[in-house]
Image 1 (cartoon, rainbow, N blue to C red):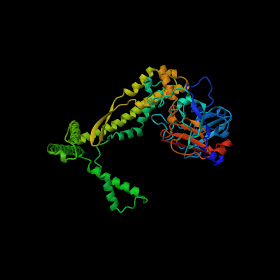
Image 2 (tube, one colour):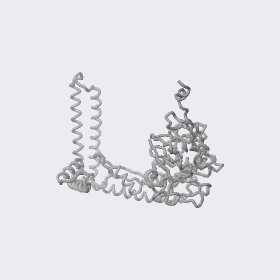
Image 3 (tube, rainbow, N blue to C red):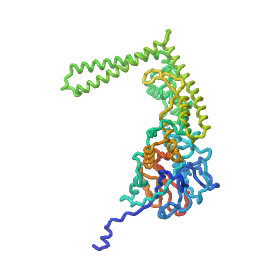
Image 4 (tube, rainbow, N blue to C red):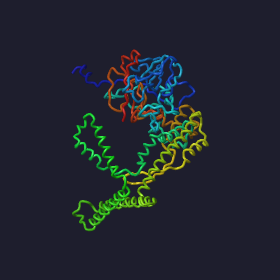
Length: 548
């Protein structure tokens, strides 16, 4: 065997690669102007227009990176090494719209550009998913993400054996400091705060209450609660079967024939109208009969099982006695529930005098439902006034404890309202009050803490040294050990492979402190052709997100 043969059998040496990790500054160096940053506002020459997609919709600004700070051998030396790269994205439709992702190269910083008036609100990882599924403008909610300066951390690594990715790198390695596994607190009240710190946080709480009172949302929740605006609807069991029978008798065309759905809907409405007409009265008697039937059924099953347990021979029975005893206890529990419903319904019906208790109860159900909607509208007006008063303030200003007490008093000390509901044949009154939702309060505290930290005014939160240290450890964490990066190999959520002629321009991970949520905690990628990168041409980009 020749020396050349020996050489050919030696394993090939892994190739060294380089990637630029975009490391959010923690702590932020507020005393110096950032050279690169995520979120905030872009700094562009005055004559540069804010980018829009093919529909004319304005994009959202994600990042501005100083090219001079990128390693010289990134992208094999291709790409600009002076000026700044700016990344803009239409966060909901970037994969389907032309121009949904755009990268600019500007030679000088210029001035900050505020987003256009028609730019929608976007804060994806807020607990109420603001603008997470559809573009909308939400007054009082920022149209841009908080600004976070980043440093360039040069990650040199050898290709993995399969050539499919960078070697794993931990957040503690990137920062050279402890990071909290799991990231920032899920409940920011763990940091010792029980209320918003700024008027912006207060606005989030009040806006959350106001959105619940919007007519469509209010009606939708009433429907989810099985609320009633009239006497209970009849039992719709068998409606679909009757519809299918009538369709068959009418010699209807196949389901894929034109007009089929319209004919089916017409027959369905016909059947429902007949059912309602035939059951417009007598619903109270039928409800009693239904539950009395259930009681007799469960009583019979209990007696049969008890007899079986008394005389049964376990040696001939596949079911152990312990299992039968558990079944018996379950039947007794179900019977108790049925008896409770019957007793409760009898008491409620007894509260309505006259020869026709059913009609009186039906009128009360209707009046309570209508009064509940009137209450909701009155609350909407009152909370709307409070919302307008808060919006007129300087939202970044501190919120005094006395001001928060006054806000909670308006939201909590309101008269109660009630309506009737029917769920699984249970007829019950429901009492509602206007209260602060925990999720809105949690969101307000979280956003306040993160905004104050990013602005350098975290002292307003009065966090202890231990809590501040824990906060910063959580801020250093990056999801799935996949940092924000430029160049090199992508961190994979779902399998894909860059073609030899492609380069990874940006990888942006889900990031709680930034407010970024790509699908289900996924990663957002922007790639381009190396030949375009060599010529500093950013007109042909591919963008996509992979989710868990």
